[in-house]
Image (cartoon, rainbow, N blue to C red; front, side, top):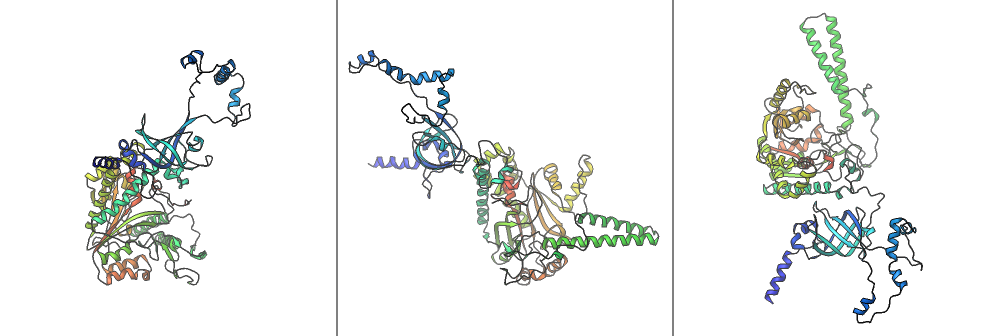
Length: 624
């Protein structure tokens, strides 16, 4: 008895257990332990990826002869010629079909074929071979269903949902095992004419129009599993380093960066006053950038005229022209501010009609709110959606993107840079270790360099340089390479474009680059000001993608942050709560933001961030 008990325990250990809350076996566990699963009875559920129906070949009928009767002891009865002919009718009909005789082939194709006695003939016996996937892994399980178990025509359409019970057997060909179905417990049929998926691959940009069906494709399902694993890795990393998870608000009354395009939150339909959206002059179609460039050019003309002591009339005319251009630039700037946040300074609303007594927005960043908790709890982080009302049609941007934001008390810029680099390497290593099957699929179907790129990140270190050094390197490269001329010239306060960053990482250094000490115009208002006029902020730029992490040391000096708020013309009353942190127990602190969707994009090698977001929202696109 003891031996029998031991044997039973061993068998239970080798079998694949069902999921806790559905009773079915997950295909990933089944296929990972295929040898041990042979002979096990299981219930599996999933969606048909592809299928085919194969008709069974009927064996020829056995006809007893006189000799057969003799061998059976003479107990058989005589067989008449009529009976012999009747038994051969199927064979005769087949011959007629081949040679086109008798018209039987045409009658056979009709849906309802009746016998001479008006009885409906039974359907031909067949077997359905189905490739079933449940989203747990890239491979599929072959399920064999006999027509006596279920009608094959109901099973074979792509997308059909099935719950099948049967026994696992070894299979021939590329499949290690297959499920021989004994019962079909559920069939979720498909409207074949309207169902968008098929056996053929559909371009990813077309799939975005069917967000509800996208995860049924192998590519999107694989990307979502990688995304899920990276999300778990995020919480694991910060838990291992004693960070506290803090949820920041999605609705806020504060512009977290000082120059963001924010979504306004309205609970009632309200029309903005026309005068708040129009400038004094009809300036539609006039670019602010072009006007500023013209102002700079005219300023140079005025300086030239003053140096050369030209006649006063020419100088006066140039000065007058410059003044008008500067006025136009000011009006354009005012118009842009009104359009992007016309009511941000004067945003009181009718509290009897609106939910909030003042205008609110979807948050662009949670770092300001997170900082208040860092000043009490030490090291904190947040993981959630952020929103930017930017109409730019970029492959690296969506209106709603998930961010991982970090704030650390008693830390400076270098501490934030080290933490950001360690976290980025941790995520790269996590994908290789915990998503090996998914990355094998990605390397085969999407980007064959993805795993080598991740290994390079893990084993190496980013190139460290200041913003001004990056400008010098790019300027030098542009002057030396005749075939490389950047579209935008370099000048003081200039923000590096994706073209510049790509050239640094992909062409010059061929690895990540960490750029720090930016001009203050390029970074949020709360970045700490350095003695040289720059601010203590940094970007981690990676090959093939661009900036994936941005961070800063935050300004802890009350007078400096106050002057910066006034300089940008931000409504001071909206930041009093933030200034209170400087008035009461101020501390050096720093942090960073990792763009989570771009991290998934970097790991998978896909070309558009919308393909790694479950339900992407971008300008003009929000179907579900």
